[in-house]
Amino acid sequence: MSHVNLIELRLDTAGLVRFAQDRGLLHPTGDEDMGYAVHAWLRSAFGQLAPAPWRLFMDRRRPTRVLGYSPHGEEELRQVMADFADPGVLAVCPDREADVRSKEMPPWRSGRRLGFEVLCSPVGREARTGIEKDLFLILAREGTTSDLSREETYAAWARAQMEKAGGAKVDEIHVSGFRLVRLLRRPAGTDQQRRASVLVRPQVLVRGELTLTDADAFAYTLGHGIGRHRAFGYGMVLVRPPLHG
Image (cartoon, rainbow, N blue to C red):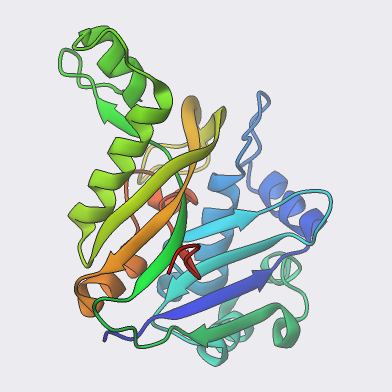
């Protein structure tokens, strides 16, 4: 099985906000998922070693943290921060020994059943315009079915994405959370002076259970994630014990 580490980064929330403010990454109308700010911080902290895909966990009840996958372990990540990150970047993760942790993912066997969850953004390209939109809105405009529901649309999309990625057959899947969020994005390859845009996109949490069909292919899926906006905190497949067998 390919080598994959689960990385946990504990972040100082105030430090992250300062980092984003200093680099002009907080838009006046909001960036509800903080995806662009965390993406920029990860690149500033770890360069090419930045964990990906990743997911931000941020609320008022628990410490802010990022989980992500990487072929690199905690020692390598701590060292690259110590060698190259500037003070403003280090202030987001001030205690590297305690705040940068990793564990190697286990060598699962084909046939094993696992639970999973993914925070994703189900979007597609509208055929007429080529513009990226909420997948549910695209299908609703096409009018191919009169009983279309968001939950069924998103669950079917996530199932297809999981099985396309490879390594597992999805046995059960359901949507356990949905909201529309404002996302900050800046055109690739531009400097900070170029105007950023704010997109409204679906943020969907799906959960389910799967059976491994190819352990190496599933390791690839973990390391690459599913769907769009993976660089900004979507598409990371987290695994857990199955509820059934």
